[in-house]
Amino acid sequence: MNFTIPETSKLRDKAFTFGVATASFQIEGASTADGRCESIWDRFCATPGKVLNRDNGEPACDHYRRLEQDLDLIKSLGVDAYRFSIAWPRIEPSPNMWNEAGFAFYERLVDGLIARGIKPYATLYHWDLPQYLEDRGGWINRETAYKFARYADRVSARLGDRVASYATFNEPWCSAFLGYRFGVHAPGLKSHRLGFQAAHHLLLAHGLAIPAMRQNAPQAQHGIVLNVTPSYAQSDSADDQWAAAFADDENTHTYLQPLLQRRYPSRVFDRHPDWAPTQLASDLAIIAAPIDFLGINYYTRSVVKKASTGDYTNVPQDGAKTDIGWAIYPTALTQLLVDLKTRYSNLPPIFITENGAADNTGLVDGAVHDMMRTDYYQQHLNAVHQAIEEGVDIRGYFAWSLMDNFEWAEGYSQRFGIVHVDYQTQVRTLKTSGKTWQIFLAER
Figure 1 (cartoon, helix red, strand yellow):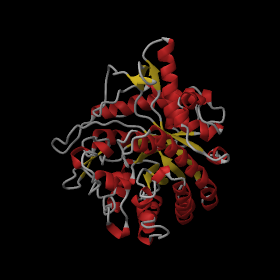
Figure 2: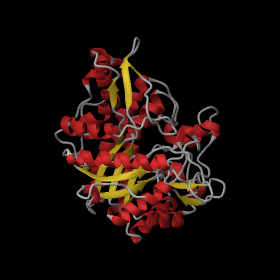
Figure 3: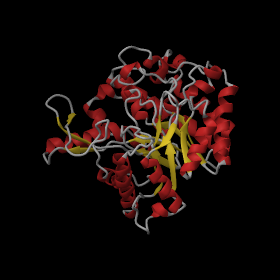
Figure 4: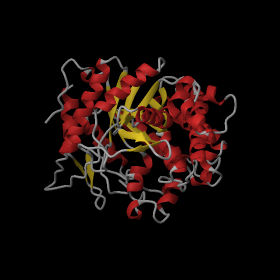
């Protein structure tokens, strides 16, 4: 089968970048190899009750030891680019100790991609903070932002313009809110105040890092990746409409508005002044350092109503869902992108840096017919096409994920890959969704 995309669509233009994406902790394994130190996710996985089935990052997809095989796999898909993340614990396993083996691994990865005609898209932080920094306060500690900027300087100096695109952070909402506010991700703290403080320091770290990254890799693109789950009001009532607007300000514009407008949404901190982060007068100017692109990770929408206590509450949704329980609602992706273009006059070019579905269809007779996921991609490619037609500057799309992997607090229970991984044998099997991507990319 093939994806059905209009012949005139910009998605068929070779200038549009298609890729697949992964993250270091989710696929690499080898958590103690070649000097790598403990990360907050190693510690979190080892804490009873935090991760389903007490799963952990070993061996995941054993990607660290199977790099060449996996690079050949990526090449076979026909993608333009590969989005990966760099594990800080491999690069700086103790304070001020820069690990040559860690640099060498990512140099092999980058050079291997280039040799295969694939553009490297690097993310410098996808949640795996060195545990020694968490022991000093992690993202609650302002010093961590400066530590990150130094790490970003070292990595971008080493890899330079061999990397086509650098993102400072992937989904700071997850790092800050799931990690420090709601306690469901590492390091597992639960405090509104700490969640917003962590968010501020993550954004500050981004702004501090960008100038040196530009100097080290002047030909590369530099930006940041946000996850966005747009909120829809359950009804037309004023209360529910307010709830949806508040939810979007809290979860999306708390991150995007400082980056593009040098301020936080007033609606959130006017209502909850005790949530407001401690900051210096110069911080917002630093955070708003110019970026070349904005990455958007989109999976689903939320439906909310005004809560009897608190600000809003999520409402269960009818209709199709992925196997992790997220509603399939591609129209929200188009509306989100158009809304961002309307709200932010200085919106940079957009990349859809993650989009995909948990489809746990198993391996039968050597094949995985993951039709729900394949349909999901079709619907969301149509949504991206429609957003472009409505004037949004979208430059690329990355399918999540290259292969099944460790799904954070869900352990290995959810499969997002277009390639099936047998975690016992580490055999990779291209699924129907992956074959569909192959055909589509070959025919562009």
